[in-house]
Image 1 (spheres, rainbow over the protein chains, first blue to last red):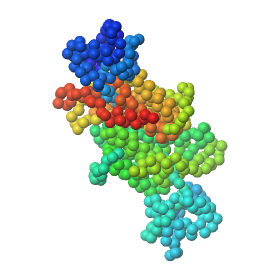
Image 2: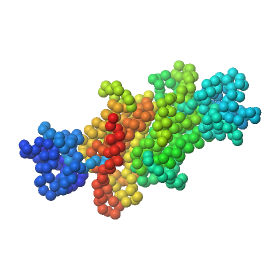
Image 3: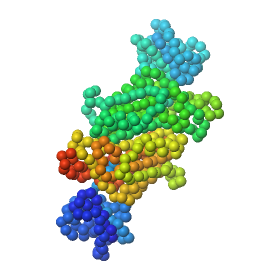
Image 4: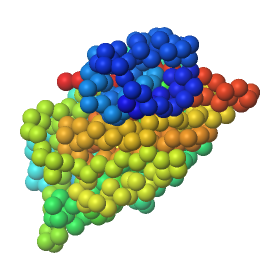
Length: 83
Length: 83
Length: 164
Length: 164
């Protein structure tokens, strides 16, 4: 699965994208966030305030309980401030 | 007093302005409308549907019961359709 | 808006009102408000155009009450400036003969905040529709001089929305 | 709006969405919608500008999610076209470095009716603020790279107004 990071999530993780092979136990967005946050301090800091993290699956907004089956690209970012 | 007419009020009366000397008995807008409507068929037709006629006294919107004391210019016209 | 403080006249946004037969230039009017204030975050414009009414209409003829037209729109614009935190408010209304596709009226509202700019522009248009002394007569393509356009009840309802 | 009929896709207004680093021209965008339809009576534009924040700000840097930004704004614009009787709807959002006074976002809504044009433009802006994947970082005049701009609760409330 392709992962993409934006704004301060990207800065804290230190890269804007990566490709990962997910263990079979990771079935929802929340699972994926837990799995990533356990990786190192950068990820932990990016996802420390889990509530605030917004998610898009294949470029559409999704909730943290959304399933990952069939998803090619998941993106994580802070609340948007465009406009 | 200077009187001014606009749109179909002007067309029915046949002129866009005139100066009148009002009898002392004419003290409100409604009195003035009655007095004008009694003049001839044109005025009668202009002011037939009295309810719909809008009034401005010295270039500010006014109601039909407004007093005429001190007024220099009174204008009569249909509901506005600008914008 | 729930702003309870009444700003002093000196704090109020500059109001520009013009009644003219000449056309106007939306971009130039926006630019003028922007140049005057580097802290504007939002500019809303409304342009009212002459519709072709399904191809029937040759032109509209706009009659107005000189003097009162400018005074009344200025009164409405000042009220908008008291009600919303604006940085500038411009209203231009044309008179005379206007053909389909032509400009009739322009409102430009500038503010730090987008809600204020939207609401002030809509308020000004709603009141202008029902209170500014202009009247439209239709000239049709078949050569007849059509009717005076009737005022619409929906315009009165739109204006009544703003009564607090 | 209390319109209960759902227009078929073919009846819906043309939607134009662009994500670009280049500046845009409000007058040209208005002109494009006008030319396409001679029965437009009302055009509302919203321009969002970079404020100077009391002189502190050197520039904003706008990051976006390419692909999703265009897709999401298009989804919001299509929803606006289903909800209001529009004749055209354009949204342009810039990315990259933007200095105070510069343009950030433009919405143009055209309709037969002014209420529809106002409401659609405001709806599109409210949803764009909370759903379009853009993020602003401040660069300050004192040379420091400032913070990422925080999302505002008032923007979420503004968007929530439109939930029927």
